Image 1 (cartoon, rainbow, N blue to C red):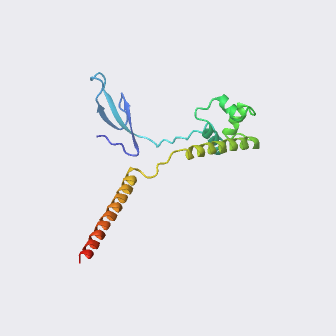
Image 2 (image 1 turned 180 degrees about the vertical axis):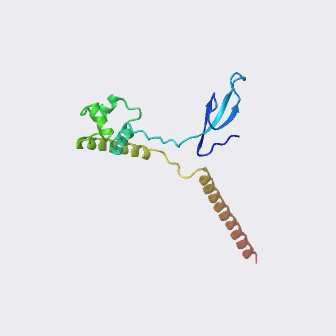
Image 3 (image 1 turned 120 degrees about the vertical axis):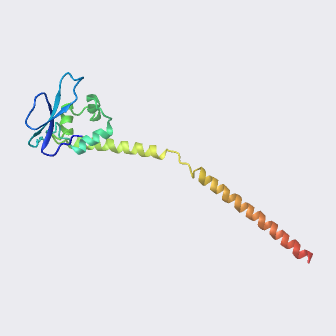
Amino acid sequence: MLQVSDGLRASCARREVAGTRLPVDGAAGKSRIYLVMTESAPQEHVKPLRRHKVSNGLDAAIQELLPAPIPRQSLIDLFEDRASFTAITAWRFGWRAPPQWAADLLGSKIQAKINRLAKRRAAIPVQIGGPGERGARHLRIWREQKARERDAKEKAASEAALRDE
């Protein structure tokens, strides 16, 4: 097994380059490919700039209200035709600050969605106790009933024994 150290890199070449030459099986022996170990400087990659500067607040709120991918018309309808698509895009990506009315409108729509979800949550039927709890409750009631019957029989037997004396 070939191991590559920190200062070495592996490259395939058809001719020998300075370094250690190791043969690698080619396609049916037609051409011989060599794995050559050469010294190389560490490569530094610059992180690319983000295409869009995303504003956490407005973009996150829009994504909560509309499922991705978001069509242009849906964005315009979300702001009730009071803003253009380019203005909304500029607000979403943080190029411009949104006006107060837009923030208030999104806040009210998010609150309405929260209220709808709370109503749906309240409408979910809840089963009181699972099958195990119901079974345990019935078993407890049955045992109490049997204990009362047993106590009543013992009391009747002791009263009959007292009468016979």
